Figure 1 (cartoon, one colour):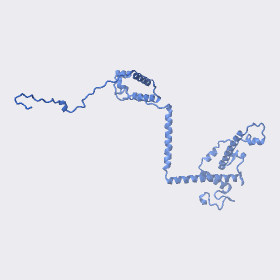
Figure 2 (cartoon, rainbow, N blue to C red; figure 1 turned 180 degrees about the vertical axis):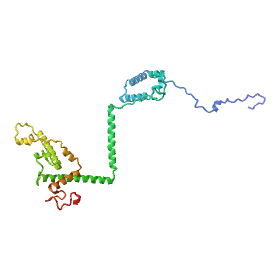
Figure 3 (cartoon, helix red, strand yellow; figure 1 turned 90 degrees about the vertical axis):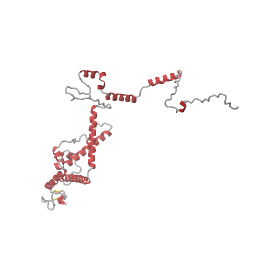
Figure 4 (cartoon, helix red, strand yellow; figure 1 turned 60 degrees about the horizontal axis):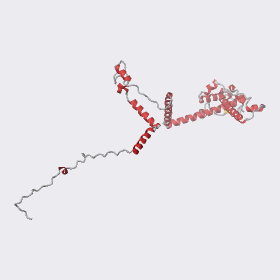
Length: 317
């Protein structure tokens, strides 16, 4: 159908444009409707109450109690009573008398302590003196460690000198014991007293001082041997013996004179001397009394001792 120009025309209309569609969606300002929580059923409520009741009924363990007590104690020790003076009766009384937090006590201004004494807790159940004993043991251990380190730092030359000195002291001591044996043999006769006699050992005080240590050592050995024998006999004898002959009494030691150690000041003074000096005294006594040279191992006929190089070991080469 052709359009008639004489007929009125209907104006064209366009769809309205939404301005919000042209803009980007603002997701940050968007709100979502919260869905209400589902209503708790009776079974769920019963289970929840049982769970809470079970949690309240369970007692804390020992470790948990100790941890809680430690935490509370540290918190209390770290809190100053002066920070909350209104709740402290003592702080309020001190404030009434003119005390202010941060100032010292006393009439001399701020010369005193600004903070209260700190509490020092002791761990464990040990006594007060145990800590001092532990410190003493630690000091002794440190001293021993220091001595050990000192010995380790000893130079090679010092070590050689010390070993040589100790070896020389042992050699001189051996010579001294040998000199005492020679002196004892000459004093008792050419045959000497091999092993010693008990009756003579008891009279050690009558032995010459220079070889008295030799006799005393035999007395000690005899006493120790007799003690071991008596102990063995006391353990082995099961039947009490009513009659004992002379041999039994001698064997069991019931009639043997007791060999008790008595104080001998003269012998103690002699043994306190250096071993080299003791050896020199023995050698001189052998030469003066028996014309015997310990280094030559020979007894001369006259007092001149012709043929002996001298008195000392060095002179004999």
